[in-house]
Image (cartoon, one colour):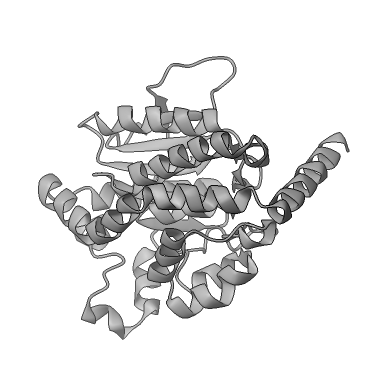
Amino acid sequence: MQSTRFTTLFSRTAAAAAGRQSMQRSLTVPITRPVVIRTFTSATDTPPAITVSKDENSPEVAIVTLHQSAFSHETAKLFLKEWKAMEQDQSIRAAMLKSDLKSIFCAGIDFQEFLKGPESFASYWRTIRHVFDAIYSSRLNTAASMHGHSLGLGCVLGMACHDRFMMGAVPKPGTIGLNEVAVGVPVPHWLAELFASITSRRSAERFLPLGRILSVQEANSIQLVDKIDFKSQQEMDEFVIRYLAGRSKSPRVAQAETMSVIRQSFLKMFRESEEYDIQNITKYVSEPEAQTILKEQVAKLASKSKK
């Protein structure tokens, strides 16, 4: 397949005004080969929360796999460690973020982290911000292959990537959205701005104040998700790897610098507001209303786990 078909995907130029339909047609490519994974992190009988692999046929594409549904502080620290190690490997040009969990990409923040007290949560939120920063500022071409529910932080991890893909043609497709308000926590300023820039300000106004979780079709209609016509996770993963391999055919330095320029204004605002953001969200998480709702959510989860 010619590299130009990949490098022109998702172009936001005037030529793209001809319509989103042409984009969807250019994204629909046949499955031509199986994917074989070669792990280059240490293998154990019980896999850690995060593992990083390489595609054998496209070794320039790394595959970052989540093995836990919710992000604890330790999971976030491990993610940062693995991501930084991957960034230092100059043979890698792209990264696909996925999970091996049944029907879940990422269920978001571990609710227990909300209940450990202000100081603990502030430290945790700082680490979460660093996880987002590592993905969003990466030199790599990044895409999320989100085979299942992508709630809260799951949605954030997807939005940190350049592209997002979900399955919409399966019997029980996943859902995606920022559900912070539903658990009594306001959406941070930077996150609301990012959602609005990816979708539209009108979409942000419609969905974020309600903590709305969107169907795959709804997410695709507002461009939160780029492509949804996959019948299986394997088909989607194979497509994403080929797509990332195609993007990575562009000259390395020029591409990385251009991606940096596009994202630098948002990153500047994001980084400069770190202390305010941490103090602000910690204050709201500590409010009695939020703590009550969060404890109810923890109790519901505990009840489900016993059934």
